[in-house]
Length: 58
Image (cartoon, rainbow, N blue to C red; front, top):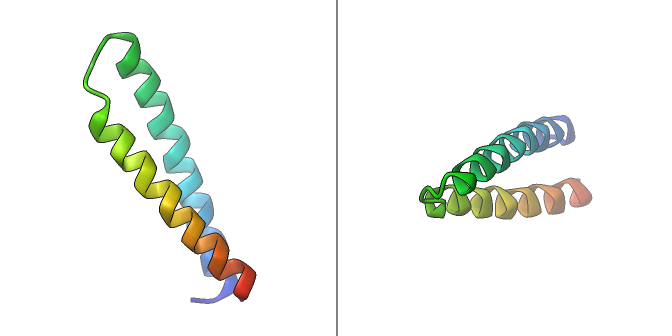
């Protein structure tokens, strides 16, 4: 994976992260089950950490 591909993937994950955060806030406001969304957000955070590390090494 080259630097540009990593950067593109990071941008896609950031957009997905923002979308999930908005969904999470809506779900919290109505008292819904937020555990699955929190899990997805955590997975995205971990993937972003990995990609940012790869980007620094590239």
